[in-house]
Picture 1 (tube, rainbow, N blue to C red):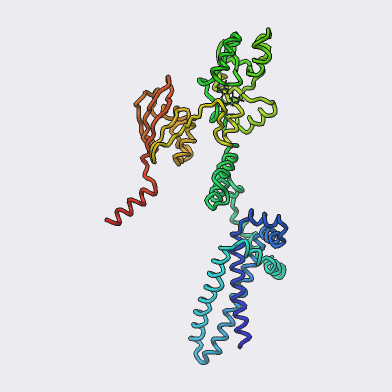
Picture 2: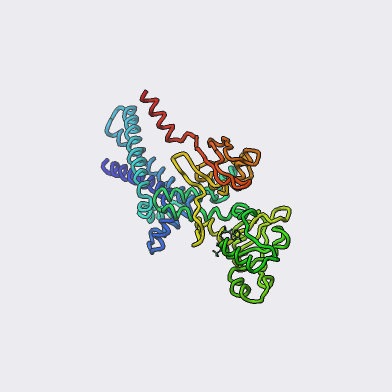
Length: 431
Ligand code: ATP
């Protein structure tokens, strides 16, 4: 009888082991485990090897767990029958109730909870034994693996396309929340991931802001343009901006041309043209290969839509870069909890990101890239100072115009936040 009791106890311990192993292997952090393995930890290596074959591992765990649970229940029924002689109904009921409580508490809930707290440590602890059991139980698990394969063929999942960009970004956000990554590291990684999808149209300096000169410009005039604009590269055009023919570099101009007889035309360097829909990662490679810093962006009619420089591209990864001579302009300025002053030039996606506005796919009100374009699309006309509209829970008012362009506008966020709702609910409950 004592031996049976010991076997039941061992079965409960093994049941706890299997449950904890299952939880540990399904929740451990692969990156952390890889780091440990790279430092030479053999058990971590074994954990990674086992988890690579997760289906076999789960079959082993399930088979092992069921064997020990069934064995424990059967032996317990026999034990109770020996203890309570002559009342089979009572002994069976008691053994079922007691064993269910014991297996549920000590064989499932407690070990799973503990393993979830220390998944890496527990998976390394349990790896050698589960590896041995995997080999021992191999003949049985092979039958279940066959069944699994058969079922997964019947219920094929075509949706599994590997990890999506959104999932990757969620992982990074989780790592930021857990403290594994700081905010700056997270932002940098997210920008690098999103970088691939961006098109030139989202980052170009628009035509209206281009500083360029006509090919018949005098040396004095060009020197003045460099001094006033502060730009190192000035595009040069025939007749109008739609016919840009090249670019004049500040250095070439002042070292080879300004104080010599060399005409400007001799120091004009070739320029490349790109479309608005070109991906910026391709353009970055192109500019690097051709050792260029600036490209002219053409629209669908072949007219000049703007220019884009290496700095514009790099800024999409590392954030705003201010040169020594740049005037620092904060395009989206929060002036109170729910109020913002926003430049018309600001990128509309950046504004929506900042305000946590997510537009469902296909429900964009406008194709505009800038806040200026978005506001005018909604107003349906060239804006005027004082014009206002409401959209997406925002009250927007045009503050200042610069010619036909909005210089800045005021945004009041009138959406009710979750915090506000919680406060309102709390107030209502108090009443
Ligand atoms: P560098 O820093 O090498 O001296 P830069 O200050 O002249 O160059 P970039 O740093 O390449 O210019 O670009 C800074 C910003 O100025 C970018 O947004 C770019 O689009 C814009 N820019 C550069 N050249 C011109 C230009 N000729 N006309 C209008 N905008 C320009």
